[in-house]
Image (tube, rainbow, N blue to C red):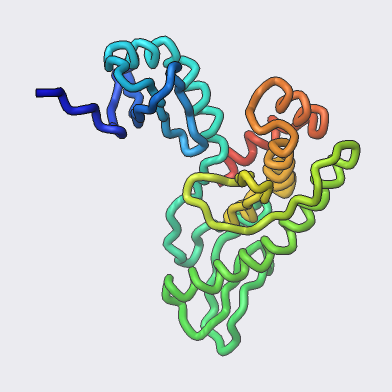
Length: 241
């Protein structure tokens, strides 16, 4: 009786120091073992069919420090917007600055930045209404500011031919921005809460991927050349909220 073949996909965890590394294991008909860290910080191992678990986990342990460095790098792009209650006095952000929320019951339906406050006007002060109208306000302003940031970043690439990339505003749970295999740049609408230069940084970062798909030395050299202070705005993006 033949032994059954191992499952094609396995979700496992590996103890590494005082922490654990969850990973997805996939077997394929290949010669080499590959370890990938994805932008959502998930770890995927692609192993040759027949590779032993001990061999696989030995490789993971050997690359453990690299895996955690990659996860820390990608963590900068994970939105950290706190859960909002949409109640008076709560701080909401726009272009990196915080504004206390003020609710005014009125016939008109609008959001205004007045006197250092986000003032929401409407027939209701219920959190769901406030969330809905404030989300629409953010999205409308994101359309304007993202276009400005994207076009500004695109002008920085004039010495290079990167075609005519476009962008799309798309809500993403685990990314500030992304570059699709087709070359379209995706921007999370929550970015509108970050400083404008941080928005510009995300646009520039994703456009750099059109020249260098991987985060290698060539990618970072280009990013540094186009935005020497990119680390400052990356840090602002990490902690603005």
